[in-house]
Image 1 (cartoon, rainbow, N blue to C red):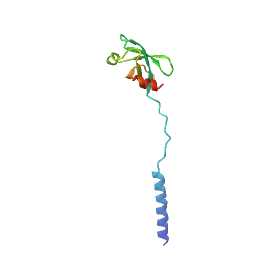
Image 2: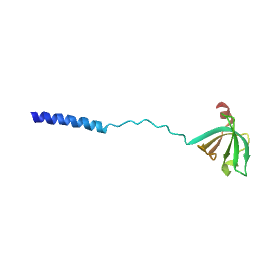
Image 3: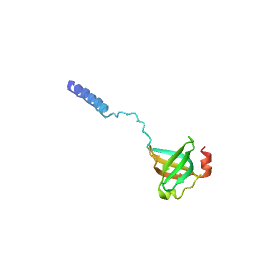
Amino acid sequence: MKKFLVILVAAIFMAGVANVSFAQVKHPKKAVAPTVEKTKGTIVSIDAAKKEIVVKDAKSGESKTFVVDEKVLATLAADQKVKITTKVGSNVAESVKVMKEEKAMKKK
């Protein structure tokens, strides 16, 4: 009977240790820095020779210069409302989307 009791206590102890070792620790989520910046605004000027456009930011009102692919540059015109995506700290446009006039007005 004593052996049975010792084995039972040992089994319960081992089961408790096993549960603790398999328990997952929850790690707090780290804040991930954004990898892209999005700018909405109006095209002020286009420089085809330098492959650049100047956009007046709708939020801050400041002018920002972006380097744009030739094919995309050919489709753009001054006074168009655009949404430009760049990598953080870069002025090279990853994507340029022309916004519809009514959407541009609603978002203001």
